[in-house]
Length: 608
Image (cartoon, rainbow, N blue to C red; front, top):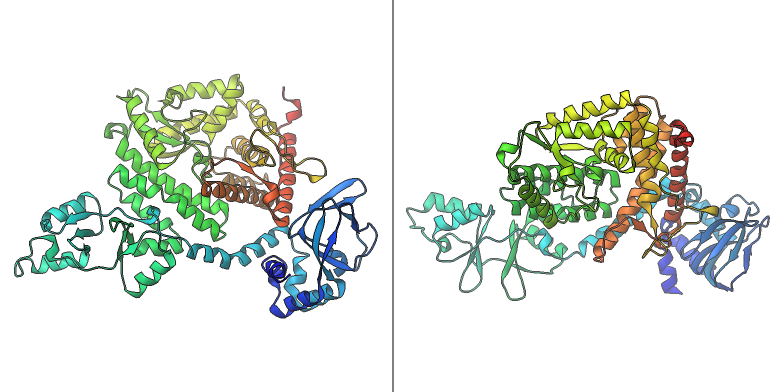
């Protein structure tokens, strides 16, 4: 009983109560058992109990219509008690039920003494999500404190023997772009940092400083791999340590932990990753820094940062990464003769976790690149190493279809407008989401302007383009039940096909019609609001709907990443709490409402 009661204190709305109120619940409530098909509250009958499910299923019905399903940790009966009204629905058990029963007198006393507790029952879905995030902050921070050291946060160690000459050691430090030197002595390691180098510069002649061990700090403090980061933070801040060597079980150095990186881990890793990418001199430097973006994503998600803001930060990191790779991989004679473009979700700045490579090249007319196949393959293989899966649709620079001259792209655009087939419509959608990330940007801008002119001249193309919004059915069926399925995805729904695509493509079609150059879906919605097509309320609902979908998708993807599973677009509604399920249902309903709006706008019922 005590263990079960301790569990409810962590769930809304009980987490809003103080200890006095929680003791009142403990003293007056009881645990009850009900077999299947028991009517707990009948329609048009008042209840004297507030229910909290421990285990089992309860359905709320209005006659034969299923209104809602309640399971573990869900609550019901509160509104009826507060407003002293008979129930509009019948609540019946569909599985054996074990639940807390809180008497009406206790529940009413709690609402009278705790304003936040009472307001919870009348709050909107968005307000409840905000409450949930606030209450989870401390738990999430505790999880972060239990994170242990691994190589994702370490810098490569620049290691030299103790008898190495100082100049040779410094040259190695420069070659490896290191911020310190580890000195391997007969017994343990020493370290050389900026302060030691200043000592050498000022006193090397008078003290005859010639080998690296002459200027090292020795012995030094080290830490073992797998140590709790929180303990390391206490050590480094307490001892004013900026560079901490990390050793494996054999006592060998596996890397250097920098204090600024550790602080960044507990705050926000965006700045440090950005600086590392910008300062990269080698491909390996770019690869190492870019691999840390996933850690940044996890940290921001745990802090409750909205998915669209995470996407924006990740997009900025990726743009810096692509620009640096362009400079390091592609020959200098290419740099002002072509444009490196990002397509699809990368072009829209909406890819968070690395789901696929979507990129291409536009060559200046008359430019014939040498060794194109070898160079573009090298670029693709580097993205492989960073962790970007190859695009299943082959939308990559290694595909000549997406690496050709501006004139050939113009030929494609003309064909898309005149007699588009399904593949043409898909290619048009991909290309319209293009962002030019490196090279001669003017080549792309001219092509984009050409696209907009063609659209104005072929208005009949737009309904055919917009019709793809009807490609996928909603995963929300009759009586607000989730429709799951798909090979290997029992009980899961494809949130991208079932919801996200409709918003992204519908907004894309409207943006194309109105000559909006933005590629990001959120920015396109703002632009549609600015020109008066969409009012502020509709734009706000679309923002929130997209945010709910993206947040649930990201959460599911991060869990799969943690478990070593393939990242996809499926989520399991059964693993969500009542609050999240209700939010998802509302989001899916709004998606259908938006699809109808787009369908009516483009008269899709008249399109063959």
